[in-house]
Image (cartoon, rainbow, N blue to C red; front, side, top):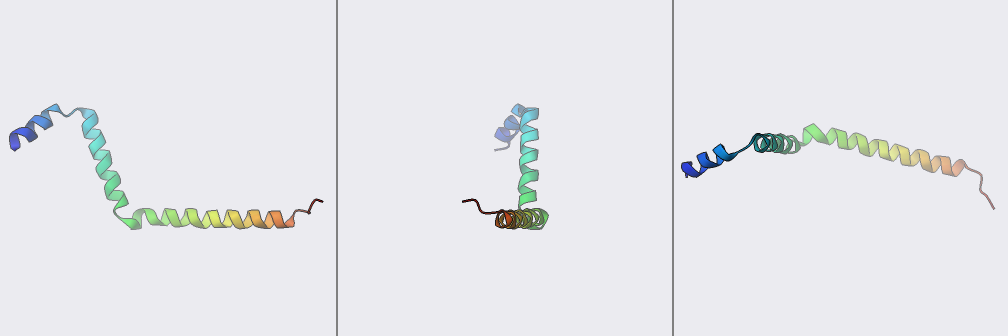
Length: 65
């Protein structure tokens, strides 16, 4: 078992290490909702505000015949 692991470790390139480290960091970040959920809530709130402003602006436009 260790022989195959050591063989794999010897064949790993720098790109393999970078890719795995980035994947672990992203996985850990997404596994803690308290880190990313506030940004999602802010986005949803701003989207609702933009939609409400757009509806109000369309309601204030004069109706064309």
